[in-house]
Length: 188
Image (cartoon, rainbow, N blue to C red; front, top):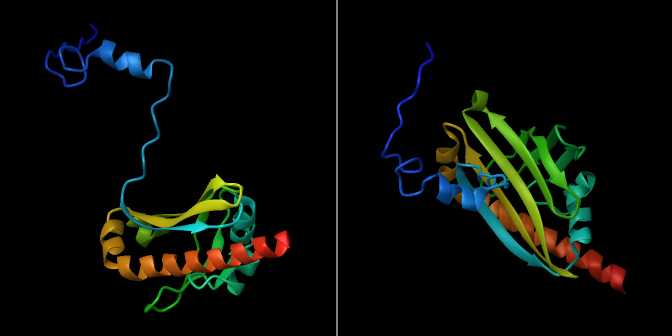
């Protein structure tokens, strides 16, 4: 004999609730649900850059030349390809340099680079991102940030928020200077 689950009358999103099936189906019928934002503690710095997204991406994509402009990652090696490891030297203001080995999670030319890092057996997981939003032909906003997740990640993020934020700000200022200089050279 098959088990039949009882019909609940007071579910918040089911039968008898304020948002029953008919209400829900009108908004979501035929559409996938929106993606959920990663959970954790977020640290971010944004900057406007007067250069096209292609020029900014060119600077971000060229890991071999990060040592020429990037104060937060003075050494970088690897290939930007999904699943590939990167070898980065992280230099945050007031902190000792450390080598990290994240994996590229995803990338879209002229738009974004995301990488993941897992430490202490997954107790700390970070999602690092550089995202370029083009607003005009030669004007973009760059979001440079990290989400600290895992069991111990949010507490580490709160504890390190000052140096991490200053590091992202320094990196953004250097990226702005590099991209705007390249764009000016190409225009003249």
